Image (cartoon, rainbow, N blue to C red; front, side, top):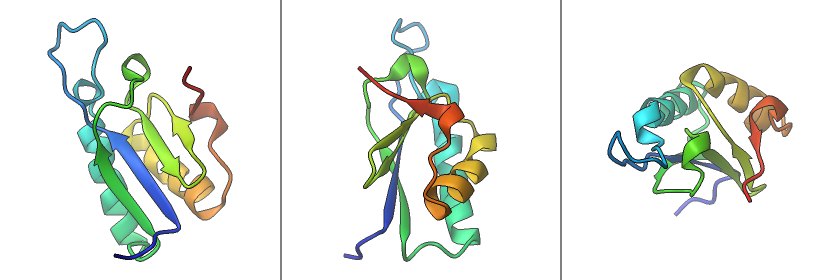
Length: 105
């Protein structure tokens, strides 16, 4: 198995629409995940960066939730439109995107 420099986890946990906790899946997190995968491929980053689906990250009300390791930086309310910025700023530039940062308690 390859050792990646960065590993992106995107919560795709699904709950029923009426669940008070909400769900990242119901907020289009699968599309966010697919956008990360597409951009990683397009930018030829597959040897150093991996995006994986994640189960619940216990931050449902702030989803879609994304976590980047090894730094352990959490992002909230991530949309497909944010993917390029996260890749450019954080993944390639080592500068977390502050406007999306999340500090779960």
